Length: 331
Image (cartoon, rainbow, N blue to C red; front, side, top):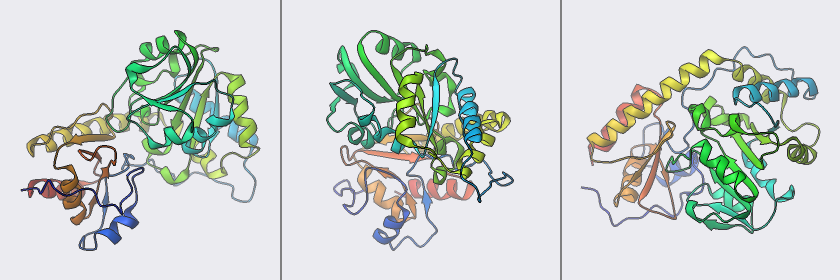
């Protein structure tokens, strides 16, 4: 039986996943190699080998424009502009500098970065959005995978006075989720997209901000002449143009998420979430389950604001699936 009295170890971070280094120190008894299920990053990465990168020159302006055009097409945009970012984390933190109107609110629960991006913003529930100001939300949401239909987002943006900021970090898996293909040139909407999560190359640090050209120009001014590296430009452009890989990966991730659901249900857990890259488990025993999995060398994502939550990314190979199944079964 799982001991429900324990809590998530204080030494482990609860604002971001991916801290295998801390997990290894906290759980030295985990003698097997670590499996990181804490990030929601695609474990089947796009292969960047063979991409030609000129390391001797500064990033090329024309190549950067080609990257942004490839992203514009991949996102299904029919209007608006795209600016490349050295990761959406930095882009979100630039929001405080581009003249967004007050009051500012961020929809919770969601990314901890959202509160930091707009320091004076107030946390609100989705049904508590007011008639004016700036609203920041995620779609699909993290960590519960909640999805807001594009037409509702459009109503939200056009039916109020202010700006709607949508973090679509996980939207690449299902293009029907994105509001970008539905936006007009003047809609007061900014959308952030992440490259690393879907393509499995988080270390590249590449993201995008999309929206009306005048607002995107404010981001460009603050980012400077070389916002992203030559490697990010070359790899990102090639990846967004690889439409066969994108279509196949969407199908693979959806099948893997279905498999993860079945594994949880067979062990008495009931996951929820609309994003194939992760599932959220809500259970009184979540803190003890976190520890048990970590002792077996499997890192998941706990949350300090709700200790009953535990988020799982997708195992990357059959050995990882087997180890997760055994760790869940022997509880």
